[in-house]
Amino acid sequence: MIFEMTVQIRVPDMEEGQKWYEELFQRKPDFVPHEGFAEWEVVPGSWLQLAKGTPAKGSGPLRLGVLNMEKEKNRVIHDLNVENFEIYSRKDVPARWGTFSDPWGNIIGFFEYKNKKEEKERMETILRVSENKL
Image (cartoon, rainbow, N blue to C red; front, side, top):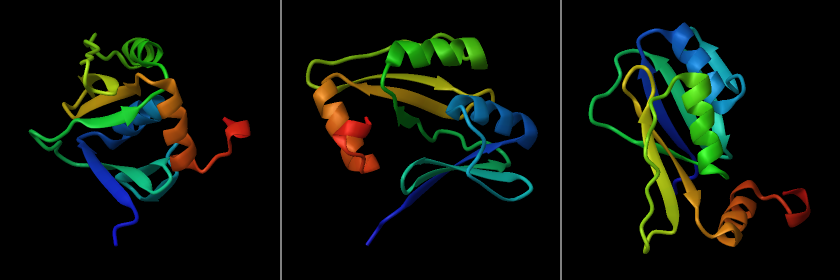
C-alpha cells in the first residue's frame, strides 16, 4: 500500500535554491534534516525534497494546484523572476495549466480547476477540512 509521496528537486546552490523555494511556497521548509537538504509538505502526505546536487534533465514538470492561476503566475514572475509563460486550456480537460522553470532548469507548473465546485471538493478531501473552514 502506498500512503505518501516525495519528489526530489536538485539545485547546485542550496542557499539560493532554498530561498527561491521558500518564496515559491511562501514559507520556510517543514523539515531540514541536515545540510544540503530541505523538505516542504505541500499537501498532507506529499513532500517536495530540495537537495544540493545537479538538476535532473528531462524530468517533470512538477505541477502544483493553485486557486487562481493568474494571481500565482503574476506572483512568480514578479517575485521569483520567472519568465512569462502561457496558460493553456482544452475543452475536455478539467483544469488550466502553465509551465515554467526554476533558475536551475527544474520544470515546474501550476494547474487550476475550471470547475470551482470540483476544486473545493478536492480540497476538502485532500485537506480533510470541513466546508466551514474553507
